[in-house]
Image (tube, rainbow, N blue to C red):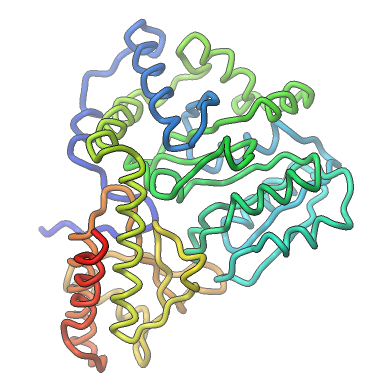
Length: 383
């Protein structure tokens, strides 16, 4: 049986090197060998965050790390701002409301980014804001918010913490946590980090740690002070996903072998440009404008005259190509082409070629080969 070609926004394909690393014999998470492993990977993964701060590993999905970021710095009744431009910005809203925070929601239409001026205008009448939560890469729409610009607005005009969901960005998009003035940055294992689900990462600035220490959180499993204390011993407070940490070491090796994280970021930018050029050549509309387009996922509108469900079904059944559909108000309107992590320009060319085959099956009017040619031209020009 032919395996599906997974081009989702997560989970994403796992490199064979990483699979083999995860197949090693399990070790005790209280052993000297684990301490060596933990310290090695948490030091090396700092490059993905763009930080000299400690990176903590949580045995959880990314959502738990988002929740940890919230519940460790604020209490019920605290004023917070949440920027939401899609489904995962709404996650932050839900988390903050669950804990009784007083949420001021800056909401943009799905498919648009939040600009620095919009945030500045929104913050102007507000006082005593504890934190501003924002999503770097909005997985539901393929929008990349301008985090550096947004963080500057927050830091220039308030004393609030800047808390960023980087779950579908880190590992494929540039991140400079320290230089941008981000106080808490979070990501998960199953997207551009090239791992299965089950491991999350969180890094805090010194200012964020001061807020954590003053907050007296009610959290137990997600108590970040506990994770920091255990990290000083090279361990986690609870049983970690040891196999995924084996895999993380292999991921760091792969990034090094690519010539460093800057080259990994450049590969994702190239795949983004190839994908967008191909869709334009096929006369298929994109949801987002180029200025805020994600390097890890492209949101694509239904080809004119086709039924999206039938198109996606044809791709999967006939050509084993598996895209993700839309979420929320975009369900049935768009599909999402994930090009992150263990994905390369050759994979984009393969996916576009298979898309063209399905389009021909369904009678879509286009010049055969136009999408592949456009993607090739971008690759040959920018590689």
